[in-house]
Image 1 (cartoon, rainbow, N blue to C red):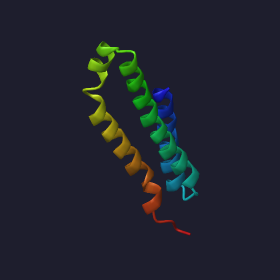
Image 2 (tube, rainbow, N blue to C red):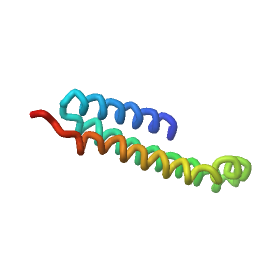
Image 3 (tube, one colour):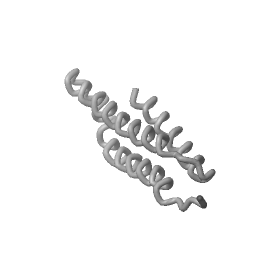
Length: 92
C-alpha cells in the first residue's frame, strides 16, 4: 500500500510542477501530493509495526536499518518539489 501511495504522491508532485510552469493554479496538486506523502509514511510505519507484532525479525532486519534515511530524504524531496508552486512568480 505504501508503494502505491508513494507513486500517487510523485505523480501529483510532477503535475504540480508542470501546472505551475504553465502558470496555472496547482494548489490541489500540491495538496494531494503532500497528503499522499503523509499517507505513504503512515502506511510504511503501519507495515513495520505489523512486522513487530508478528515478530518477523528478518523483515525488520532487512528494512528498518535503511528506512529512516530513505523516508527523511523522500519526505524532504516531496516538500521541496511541492514548494515550487509557492515560490514561482506568475506573469498575471
